[in-house]
Image (cartoon, rainbow over all chains, first blue to last red; front, top):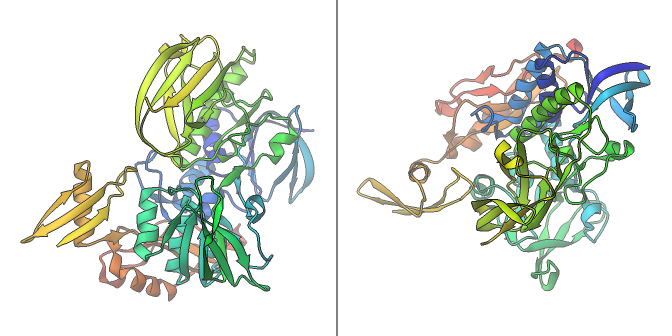
Length: 413
Length: 122
């Protein structure tokens, strides 16, 4: 059987950043597998600017950011295969791939999961109504428009106010489609303020907060939708029904980490993040299998994805030096937190970057790191929003005080 | 003259009221000075970065992404898009190659935002 020291699955920002960092640290035997016909991942279709503010202090467009990674990757002559679909990963790290030269298996010492995420669809959120043409996920419509030059509709309603939905509202308006409105089931927007202003206000597109689509109508093609306000339990109030004549509905209702392959390798998943359970080295429950980027948890900023790829590269180097497994210390979240990552601390880690998302918007709050009923740290936080991932670095000084279960708590006092 | 602007400099999103009296602009509601600068610029002459795509022949995709070299006056954006519709590129193109100088006399150039090789070179 063919053998590789490190196999990276996915050639988007996480996979590329990890491959580059590994090679720069002296690992020669790397193979990156990409299922699309070019490297770069989702960035290639995100033609708007605003990427790279943290890592490069620039506002690159998506393709420019990807190119930055790709150029360095090529310069380092790292082996890769495009049009390569991974069919299976086994627990003992055998990767089965289908690529233009055939179907075969490769034995890896280390596997990096960097497959990214998929969009939630109409099926995931179960919108009642006719099964007609014209209901698209926002990312799919983005790919058609920005890469193939195909506009999905002329009068469009968008469900979900996440950044992809907002970016598409502007993009479609610039392409001369009429965006009739954007609906958000929550009482607050899930997108960045700059996107609300530059994508909706600039084009006079109304944002309906606490609203959802309760019906899609159409014979063959979408003809219209029914929009209802929702109560505090997010249940539609049908007496508030409004009808809009549109030919297209775009869904921007969230991303799900793509872990079909991870499950085949018996990697344990977290019900909250929908990604693998990882320790502070970003190693999964299967030794030698690591995860980074959107396959691990959904990110708002590509810089954080790249940084996770780089962190995995450092962890792999440590793993090759010393594979003795130490007892992991579980990390639990409490209070107004949706999740905390990593789910455990590896005593080998010198520092631990805790990442978390709040469960509701808060103008101020306090983050506590608790171990053995003792508050090790209490950090005041301001302007917290569920759509913005937060992070906090646990230094060696704090880690030395941690010897059993850690609780990360966010409260309003 | 009064104008209400939502500041986009940071995630806080301050509601900034920009007032003008005898050519002097003042702001209220902003938490920091960056909000002052942004608010006044937005009241006097709003500008935006322009990103779009243009037709390309002989490449892996039908469209090539483009970006403006700097922010362009908001009122010129639709006109600039019309100009971009008339441009047709042939692969190969190289990242940051200028495809339109001083679009609509805005003082801003349009660049391709990625390298695209010829399909038969791939």
